[in-house]
Image 1: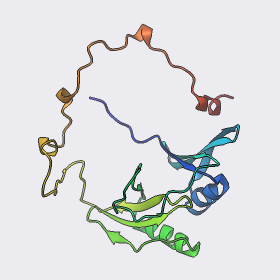
Image 2 (image 1 turned 180 degrees about the vertical axis):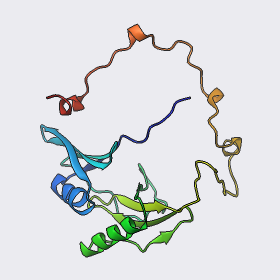
Image 3 (image 1 turned 60 degrees about the vertical axis):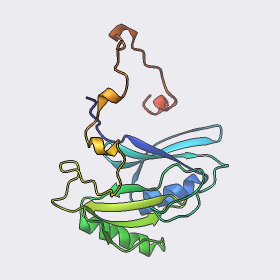
Length: 191
């Protein structure tokens, strides 16, 4: 079974990298850990924690998404609803709420969602953000919950992966056939 170690990075887009840096680095406190640019296209990375990053491409013609409340349905093309960042605890959540308010950035009241307490806000690109900390004693990974009143038959199959629903690998790639090609971001690791 494949084991995941976490999310390495989430890549989004902006038309104003300086404004994005001011918000993500200087207001939210995420370090600007890497950057790459050429021919009018840049990609910068902000560190969230030791091994997790946010990345932004700067594309001059991209437009911010329409402002919306997290969790509210939309019509038409759509990519994702919001990103939720976990904080260590209650103090950090209130500290961030105070920083956002002091910067005159809209932020919701603190909400009790049962398993997390959270606030919502929006970045300069209208990306919906949630910041939370976990409620002690509630862990869906250990104790899955399904409160859907009309779950689909696939949902009713349970929380664990059913690998027989997809074709099995009949010929794994042999060690001698494994090749790794240099990607654009390799420049960041080169001296």
